[in-house]
Image (cartoon, rainbow, N blue to C red; front, side, top):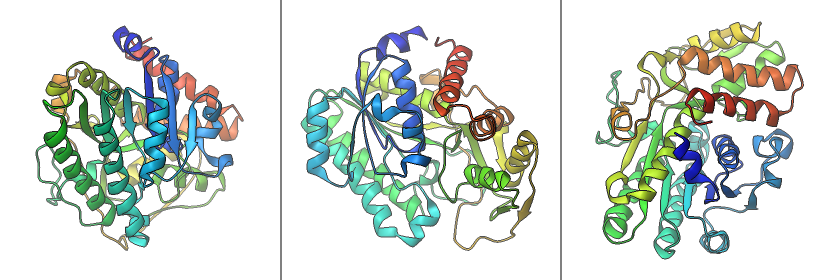
Length: 357
């Protein structure tokens, strides 16, 4: 896999949503691969944001603006001239989508449409990876692995905003790119991504860590829900491979892709928290029997397409994923190690295990 390092060295790459959890990890990994990274994002609390904790604001050509602003985005892309775009920017929280559905739909759908329209205008863009979610699929109520061609749906505003975005991406790809413009366009769907540096509210891992630090009870709103938990670098590895493949052969690789975890990593919410308590060394939880808003109970992705065509497969099982995630917070919050040191070490270890180093 040294071809990955060779490919990304000196490549101009744009990461939207760079100040987000996954975006910050992607920026760090791209820098380690030798890419020339630019990023855009919103204006977060700098004291509790992984992007700033990793000093990425000093390593990335970065601007803060709303992705719904077409002119600002177009000018930024025109100035930085990326050949590859990873689009992470989104309103990613289900509970917030109920409180502010308009924001959710406009950021997720309109912001993504801006990326597609700008990509159509600039020939220097050769590969675009549009990040959506595993929640784009129509829920059947059964525990099964969704495949890329399964019916899209979405009852809650967040899921609906992402599934409608998927339709828009497909329309742009089929209407303006395949065989017309030499640029790979793909949408990618991953499971519940975990890892150090996620400080968001209403997310299981950071909420659990915050409660453990303060010796408070961890409250679970959906203890028996099954989720495809995976360490953050697992799907990012898939995105990096895919961006390279469709850069080189856009017609073959431009489509929708699942990047799920190992089947044995489909685990309940309560089991994940029990793992966290075990690795952290203390904590207690309380299970609530009913959620106030609708969320899919069972989620699982079938990633056989990526396994076969991209030679991608997960490296970590569920226990290892939770362990390295908990270790990140423990080392940063308890042992007072620098977030950049812990993050870079985990990326190095992961690259070594995948023979990318």
